[in-house]
Length: 88
Image (cartoon, rainbow, N blue to C red; front, side, top):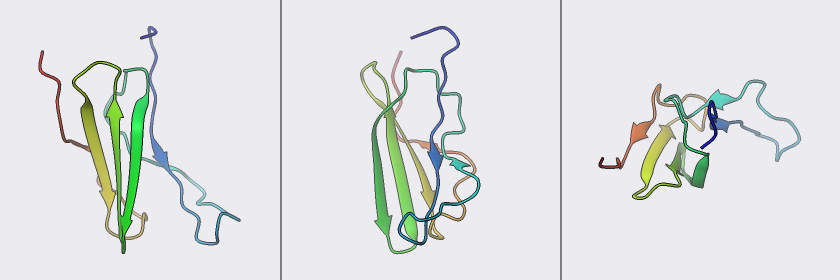
C-alpha cells in the first residue's frame, strides 16, 4: 500500500445506449478506502433495483461492501453496507 493512497467507486447512468451520460457521478464507496483498490466489482440489475458489490484487498479474508438503488440508479444508500469484515 502506498502512503496516502485512496480510491473511490462511482456510478454514472446512460438512458440512451451510452450516447450521453449523467452529469455528475454518484459516489458509491463513502467510507475511507485505503487498500490498493477494489477487486471483483459486481453489478446486478433486477427491475428498478440495482446492486453493486466490491471486494477490497489484497489482504485475506476479503472485506465485501454493497450499495443499492431501488429507482434505476437515481438514488443510492447514503452509506455502503459492509457485508464481511476481516478479523484482526
